[in-house]
Length: 417
Ligand code: AMP
Ligand code: GLY
Image (tube, rainbow, N blue to C red; front, side, top):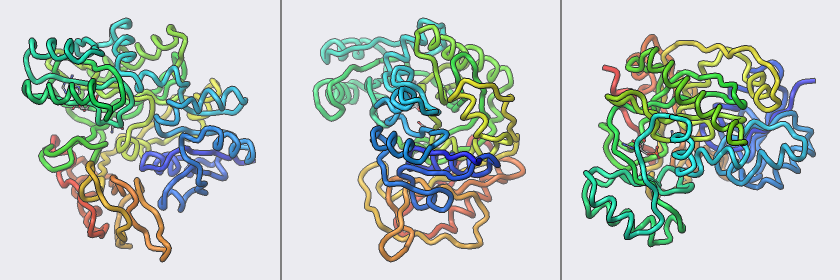
């Protein structure tokens, strides 16, 4: 009997997961909750919200789902994995306690300190006056991180006292982010990169490295976004850097989480920086990165169902095999993103396009047109003989996605000349 899989989420990351699962000979039906218009071409979309744990659990039971794979952290943060496991269902995703490695900046910092994982020195505050006095007594820029889930918007790099004061007011006095704490940390410099691994307790299986581009516009200008494009491999990260990060970051955290009684069971994502003093952690996520997943999973040569079920069920699995091809993806986002934007603009994809297309925020309207339905809308991913070739191909592909309300960066992978 072929396996029935439920993927939870609705973005480009989930499209890439569904796409990888669709390559598995073991997998029969793939459901995705809630999915999007692109995912609907490869899976059966069901209209259940990703944080509706009760609804998802009932659905999984009613369909005899063999394995559930969780995309977004929001679902982990409300305890989807705990509830599925308590009901005896197989699920790829961390417990609520383990997901704190992403959902609480302070928890992540405590784990890093305790298990000697290299990261910026920090201090955490819940009182505005204390935080401000500390920040004003230190050199700028100041790195201020809101402690809690803030969808990538809770980090402010304040260049001067005025910016720091405003940010601290927002984080500690206003209710915009809710009531919380602020982690103030040293400012680090160097290229950033994303290092993800599958993690099941102490076992980890590293994935190929990727680099995201967080700023909205070319030249790394404009506001911070969820990510405007990504590529792999990264020639500026050496095998030594990688080996260091596997041992001192990914494995150290996986071991630490076991020791803390909240073992990992999903993806550990290290947002890392190669500083002059070596590789250091900027942040952790408890899930696949988006848009990194869209350039990493197409490189997987092994059957992803074997990996997901090995992690979910604690069973054995051969070391995953990866292609070392060059790959690059460009995100097309709604004009105005990451601020406010309008939805419902028709998208026409030229049939001549030669790219993997992952939908991030699309829908089909009442006239059966493909339309924009989110901030990040669609991603064009191309492989090439090297990064420059992949970039050239992805830029051609991005231009073949026609929509009056989309914009995209043209310089993804600019660090590769
Ligand atoms: P995060 O949400 O923690 O990934 O932070 C968003 C962005 O802020 C990161 O991708 C970095 O570019 C920047 N950032 C965060 N922490 C630091 C730091 N300690 N030093 C320099 N830049 C940082
Ligand atoms: N691309 C960054 C993230 O997934 O958080």
